[in-house]
Length: 400
Image (cartoon, rainbow, N blue to C red; front, side, top):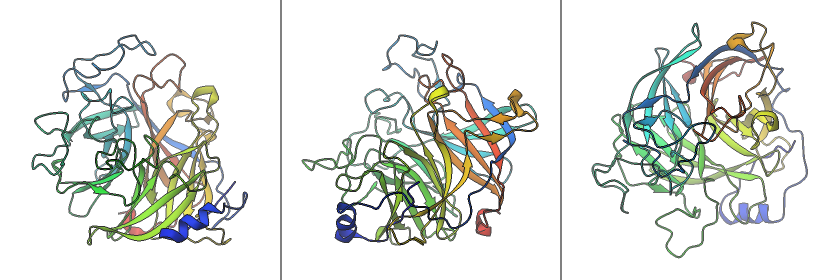
C-alpha cells in the first residue's frame, strides 16, 4: 500500500506532486491492528421518514429503484455523511445532499438528525433534529427555496464537527465551502471558500475552470483537540496533483482563515475514495477509505490511522490499518449474521470514537440506489460498534 504525507504548501507542493510520488511504501506508526470485533449492531429501516420537504424525491425518475418508487409524502431519513457523539448515548448525524446531485435534490432539506441506537433490539430511534437554514442572507447567490431553508441543490454537505460552544462546522462539496451554523441550524457567516480549488458547481468561480470533479469536495473534516483548528479533507484529487493524492488543509477557527499548511493523504488506489476523516489527537486521524463496490463487488472498505509524521520522508501521511470492514469478527453472531461480519456498502461515511479501543461506523445508504446488504433491496442505515485489537491512545478530550 502507498502511504504518504505532504507538508509542503503553495507552489512547493504543486511542484513536488508534479514530479510524481514514489511507488508503494510501508510507512507505519505502529503494527497494523488485527481484525476488529463487532460489539453492537442496530439498523434504521430505509423507508423512515420525517416532515421536512413535502413531497420529497419529486425530481427523481418515478420508475422503482430496488423496489422503491419516488416521490414520497415526507422526506426520508437517509444518506448519513457525518456524525457527532452526544454524552447521553445519542448522536447527531447529518444527511448529505439528498438524491445524488444538484439537479435532483431541490426538494431534499439539509438536516441534522438526533438518533439513538438501541443495541438490545438492533434498532435505531430517531429523536428529532434541525433543518439547516440561512435566515440572515449570508449566501450571496440565489437559493432554491424562498424561505431560505437549505436544500441539496444549494450545498452538498458531507462532514460535520461541533465546536465547544455548540455551533456546527460543516464541510461542503459544491464549493468546496466551510459552513458555520448555530445550534438551531442557522448559518452564522458567509460560506468560506478553499483558496485555489473550484468544483463545477461552485457559484463563485465565474469563468475559472473547475479543478476538482463533482462530489469530490470536503468529504471528511477533523477538529483539533483544542478546537482551534479544522482539517477538511478533499475526496478527490485536484487537477495537476498526482492521481490518488488528496489534500488535507488546516483552517484556523479564531482567524477565520486557512493557515497555508497542507498535508496529503495517499489513496491505496486512485480509483478509491475517502468516506470520513476525524482526529485522534493533534497529528493523527481516522480515515475511511473505500472502493466503489457494493455487495459481492465490495473489496476495499477500510479504516486507517493516518499520521502527519511522514517517517519515510516520502511526502504523504503514514497509514496504519485499524479495521478491515470486510473482515470483522462476530463471535456472538450479532444482528443474526455469521461469525464473520462484513460492511459491504458502496458508501461508508461515518466514524466516531466511543472509547480508546471502540469506534462506531455508519453507512450512507444512498436511498433508493444502494443495495449492498441484499441485492434488489434498498440498504438500511446501519450503526455498528467495533472493538479494536489495540488502543488508539487518543487525546483524552475526544474520550470525555
